[in-house]
Length: 110
Image (cartoon, rainbow, N blue to C red; front, side, top):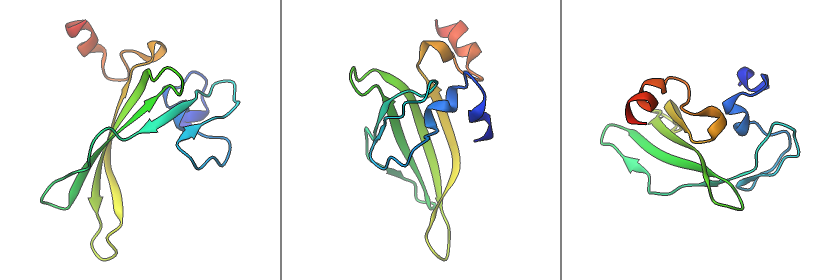
């Protein structure tokens, strides 16, 4: 997360400056946004030891969707720990649209 220290970084929302263990980021940092973390659906399990989980970051007051993270996890043999295979990030905040690598979709789909 070394990129998160750069100003105006879209991933800054994930970095917390305190030890908040509930589902709300309530930091007072200048560039940090508040959000609630939601899991809108069930974990989707593949038959090959992989799972897919969707998480949503929403504004704590308005419920406006800020970002969606889709996590693909692999289960490690031996201890059964879940390891991150890949993460897909979709940012819906105006300052970060269309998002890194999403320019073509925005131009084509509006």
